Amino acid sequence: MFTGLTEALRGYGRSVLNAVVTSHAIAGRPDSAAYMEWVARLSGGARYKQRAHELLQLSPGLRIFDAGCGPGTDLEHLRRGVVPGGLVLGLDRDEQMLVRARTQSSEQSLAAGDLESLPIADEKFDRVLTDRVLQHVSSPRSSLQELRRVCRPGGLAVMCEPDWGALQVESVHSEASDAFARYTVDRVVRNPVIGRQIGRLGIETGWTREDVEVMPIVCTDFETADRLVGLGRNSASAVADGYLQQDQRDAWLAYLVDGPLYVCATLVITCLRN
Image (tube, rainbow, N blue to C red; front, side, top):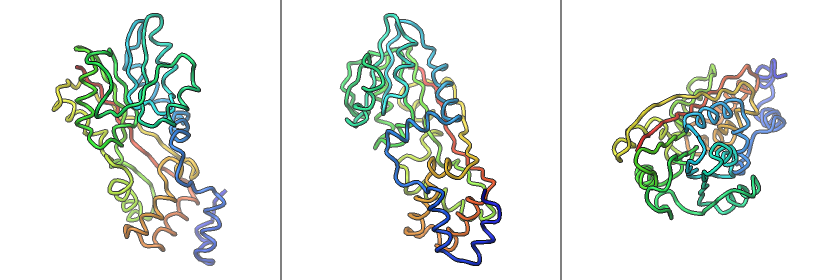
């Protein structure tokens, strides 16, 4: 579809690049709930979620805490894994996320709250799950301490968090790819390499690290990659903030649109025992 685009653009300049890129739906700032649901439907997203649920070792009667449950994409699967006799609580600080989560099932137990100060009694849960939430909190250490407090002795936490420092965008314009990845780490995500840090932080806050697995999410088409990592949106901000030159960004985006494309985001699954 995009064969020869880069060569054609050389003769026409930025206005043509902007028109072509716009025609291929450069993503704007995503709706958070819709984005989380969309990632769960990606093949790579579905694989890491399946693996996380396997590592939780669900069985009837267990009490599960989905910490930062977002729009509730995991809640129904977790509930089915612990019936009869089990309990699943989803917590999120965003009321709109909880409204969305309530549409998943009328049987969900939901609560509003912050991971750094949980409105939950000590030692209430057998299992704890986080999924791409610790990257956003102001203090991962405090959150891990709170999650340990509400997890019973011997309980298990499975934490799925990204490592944006491992982001790969293949391009002949490697300096632009490096600058884009650096901008993502420096400016886009609050805790960009939390995936690689959880094991150490867990040990420092009293957990025992049992296992670490790395799960890639690979994109081979521009629209999917753009929506996942913000190729267009974040590279525009990188230009504004001095990480990229405009002409450098133009050539880089033209190459990515022209394809073939390889973008890989990395998800780290860490298992901690209380």
